Each structure stands twice: as structure tokens, then as C-alpha cells.
Image 1 (cartoon, one colour):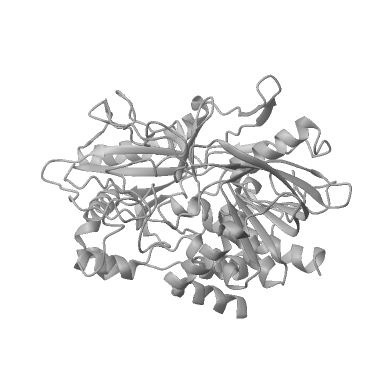
Image 2 (cartoon, rainbow, N blue to C red):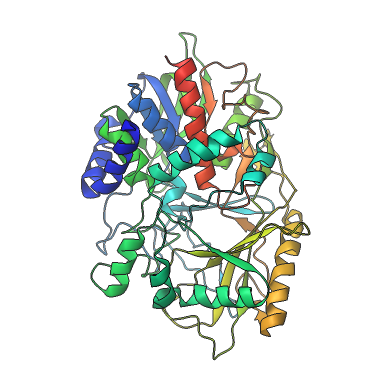
Length: 531
């Protein structure tokens, strides 16, 4: 009960919480070569933030290392983050052009030139897929649409059969939702709010075509959004602020879990440091090597520290790449062969429909989705489709969707000894089951509504956004690459705490599942390994 009160208090603190977190991220708190820490967490996303909070609450001084920036300083426009309509160097991680998910309009490339900078959104390209990831203190919570969805109970049991389902749904999912600051939209307000006309249009058409819909909870403060629409506060979700960060209203991890961890006084955050190696230390624990980088991505210095315990929470991509490299390079040679296996894109595929001119979607669109089409029970091709915004600031008559499907295909990470890079085997063609499932739903809607697909947003004459994902999962599957609580076998004191534990799919937006699983695992680890 005490921990929940602490979390809720941190969520409500706002600016004071940001001050606490800034202190934890201050230059003086950064790790230095030769430091010895009890617990080191690699990454500050969902798994890392949960781990940091519960360790610090247990009395353990905890150091978090984050490759991205601490986003706490306003830019030249007076805001910390830029918006989607005018992206600048703050938008992307070490790129000279933007790489928008919807990179085309009327078949014309609309990406823009930017200055190379350690921006908040990474579009990491592999052979057959781009993977969008958050970069900064707070990880993916800084750049996602905030949809806080608990997976279907039967599907959770299917994907993680070694986990007790009752405890997840009775204890850990509620704990995660409380810690994340999840809230529900006022459904009466939704029905009249001009900023959700786009969602109502898609909902009504889905229902008329035979599909059910559902409201989606979110970590964005819907009370703040009401004030945005009323014109009494500065706009954020209503100002095209989504994938490049959100200046107001959003309860990202820096305002919830990480702020509560900072409030214990036992947290330090070392930002703009990229962990490159983890290996056993002869004095006990592990040597962790990291490069401090500047805002252009250049290495400033290399540091080594010793940690009694290391928690890998760099995300599905980051954790998997690091562990696969450590095994191949001989730093952690006895890692299981399952490390690097079982990666999936959560069945992600995007699609857009063209509405009739008389069926407007609205010039003002809330950037935080609040409704989805639920066709997951269809055995011929389960689909859960978010009704996504297209916040362009003008009427476009476009209905956009992110479909989450049950794609069975998986990929593997492998180390390329000639380049020193870790590669991902996923090919775009592996997403065809996702396209097929989504096509069945949206073909039906188009036929019933006498509408057509947009084919100008994801490329030239390209209907499906099938070559990127927002939801990377897997690579270090629970109870396969690790034990049933994320411990790496053969290496006492090494743990995996993030989305790499989940075998490629959750059927919904995965961050609540990642958070709840981390809550479960760290509770067990603290009670059995640390006390």
C-alpha cells in the first residue's frame, strides 16, 4: 500500500517530481570509471523504471544508465519537445532526415532535413523492418500514443504459459495501471468532443460493417485534454504532439515510476551513456563498459564500473543486441542459445482509408487514441485495430489505423563478426499474415461503406504500412532464454526485465504487459535474491 501511495503522489507532483528526477540525472550523479554500485539498470523504459523504483524502495542504491538524453530543458521555442508538423533536431535519434511512419502524401516524400542530434525517436533499420524506439529518460513512454491496454486473459495464458495468470490479473496488472497513472476517457465528453470526430466516424463505420469497438484507457491525462479543448491550458495532445514527445498532459515514466524512485533519494541516472559490454569481474559482480556520447553521437569518453547486479532493460532490441554480442565476443559465452530468438513485431501493420467528402474526420484530431476495433475473437485472423489520429491540423478525410494481429512469424538476432554488428533476420514478407488479417477487416468496412484505401501514405502505390513496428517484442523469452523470473542462467546477478521477455506478441499495445511482468519479476527477485 505504501508503494502505491508513493507512486500516486509522484504522479500528482508534476513540476516537483521533475525537479527530483533532474537531480537524479544531474551531471554530478553520473557514473565515473571505478565506481562500484549495488545495482545497475541498463535502460529507463518500462522494465527499467519498474526495476529502479522497486529496488530503491527496498533500500538498494540503484544506478540507471540511459543512452538517450534527460529531456528536461526547453528548446528555442520554449518547449522541451517539437511537434509532428514542424520536426527539428529534437525529433530523431542521430539522423539528418526525418523517417516518419507516414512518410508520403499524395505519393510525395514529405520527410524533412534535420540536424543530426540525439533526438527522442529512433527509427532503427534492419534488413526488412524499421523499429521505432524512444530515446531518453523514460524510454518508449516519451514517444508512444499512451494506449494502456491489458491483453485478453486467454491470450496472455497462451503466450506466457509459465506465468500464473490469476496473479497477473489480480495483482500485477492493477499494480502496473496504478503506477503508470492510467485513466479512462469521459465517454459522454468523447461523444461531443470535436477532437475525436475522427474516432467516432471510424467507430460508427466499423459497427455498421459488423465489428465491435471498445474504448482504450490511456496514460494521457484526459482531464487535461478537456481543458485543452476548452482553451484554458496550453495544448499538447491537441497540438500534434505525439511521436516526438509530449510537452503537457502525458504521464510518461519520468513523471511516474522514475519520479517516485528519485523521491527515495537512492536513484542516480546517467544519461547519454551507451553500454557496450558486460562481463564478469574478478572481484565479484560484473564490469560494465559504457561510452559517454555528445548530442552528435560522438564518444566523449569510455567508462568502466563494477556492479553487483545488472538488470538488462534496454528494450527488446537493445537488450537482445547486447546479450547476443556479449555471447559471440566471449564476454558472456555461456548464455543460452535461446538468447536472440523469438523476436516479433506484435503483428503491427498500418492502413488508411479515404472518406467521402461529406464525411469529415475533423481538422482538429487528438493525438492520443481512445478507441479500437476489436475483432480478436475471429479465428480466421484475429485483429485489434487502434483508430489512430492523423493530426495534420487540417481536414484530410483520412481514417488511419494501427492493426495488431496474431502473426506467427518470428525472427532471430545474430552477430556479424565481419562488421561487429548484431543483425535481425526479419524480412518484410514475414508480415504478410498481418496484412492478410487486417485486409479481411478493412476490405469488409470499405465494401460496406463504399470507400477505398489510401495508397499514397506509406510509399508510392503502397496500401499497407508493413515494414515498420512500434512494438518490438522478444529476443530473450521468459522461461527459455531466462528462468521464469528473468534470471540469466549461469550468470548469478544478471537479469532481463523488459519486452525482450515476451515472445513476439501481446495482441494489444504491450507496455502495460511489460510493466506488469516487470512488477512480478522484480518482486520475486527482491524477496529471494536480495534479502
